[in-house]
Image (cartoon, rainbow, N blue to C red; front, top):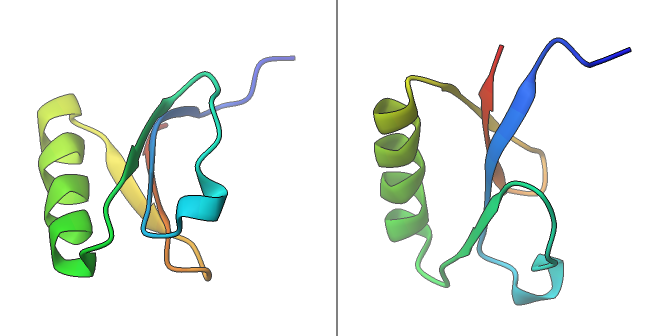
Length: 62
């Protein structure tokens, strides 16, 4: 069964969490830049943002 959401992008400021995979993965060591990229990508893709407890962001479409 297909999940009810799609992960479009994963954004992180931790280089150790950078792995390849299906969704777009972006890294920035500047937290403010990371937040702005997340907002811009979500707006462009008409998607939602989820901030994970580890500080990373997911851009998802429900």
